[in-house]
Image 1 (cartoon, rainbow, N blue to C red):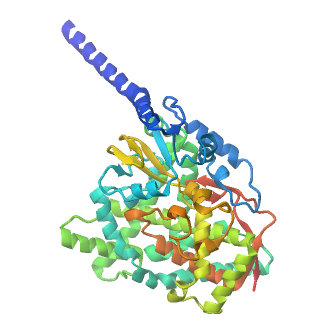
Image 2: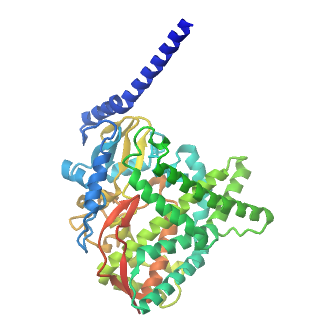
Image 3: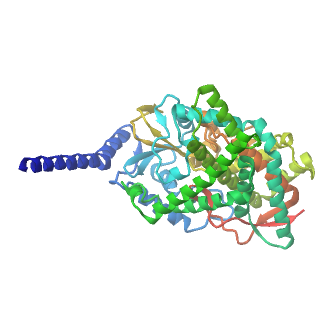
Length: 515
């Protein structure tokens, strides 16, 4: 028996040694090797600190920036919205478009060069992918945005028909109905002299639009999902500084327990909606004129053509979660920042109103008319440039790849810094921080040097919902401009900050006046 105890102890010792070597490689040797490779090719960045990297500094610097408001009419938001990214510019110089810092033991390369950004977004050969995503972020970004290769291609092919421009035309009445409810409510508040926090109301509005156009339900059925998403976003933002710690996601902390509970609640609600719709389709009572119906129809067609290779019910749920988060969050932010900016720049508000009145008068906007609103389109693009909903686009190197003059080894994180490119005077001129929609008078591609405009990502993975978002935003703004003039409340505090997306930290109180 003694020999059994000896060999048992030896096996345990070898296992412990193997585990220790693996941890040392993860926490020390591998990061040091990657750092040497990056520095040897001329890249500048912070020095690696074991395990935590720069996460603590990122959190601290952002919190310091968020503790103070900005000047009321300034659009130079980078130091406040992403203080750590701004510090990189100050530390390494604005001429360095590629730098790196540390997200735990992984180097994250910040790329603010449009040509390299396009090269990365166009990659189809497998060297670059979505790669590692913090487990907390995965609660929000699932579905097609997180897939690579053949799986991504299948999901995108099944999703595409639901976002075809001809399908969007049929959703215009639902958009219009939601808009009518919004402006009717605002008219009553304006008549009583009440200010409106448009950020709050526009979240409800875009939630209503998603509920009706995606699921054929009213906002009340989707309200619980939005409340849960808002709570989850705050929890995730507060936990990011700890979530990179090995094994942290397996601990039964209050944070982990709550985000799991929220995730399950949202899944159960969406699963119920999907199953009801599937039953209706089987009985022949379903109307396939919303996104869910079109998605189920496309999925069924895909299965007929490829056997049972369509999306599973769980995959459908993940895509629906993405509809709710991306469709509601990004469009409400675009509308909110547009109203804030037009409140600051009354001359552009009036120009947009005159264009709307000349095109539609006081009548309901039409699909064809919306597509010809040049001034309003320029305004939306300029707002997306100054206040992009997502600060950047994450990727990871899966196989060694050369980008620009640098060969990146597997494991390196890439962050395509949209907000820095959108605020870089090298691409937009010395008036980069001014609100000048005329930049886009000749279209997106002639607006800047190197075509440095990436509000909807780019390449073959360009945002599938961009036409949906722009159509919704144009219609809402038309109805608002037809019925109101507006300016900032004295209580407004200009404080863009980032909690997954770029939000107004203290809301967006605005004074509305009926026309």
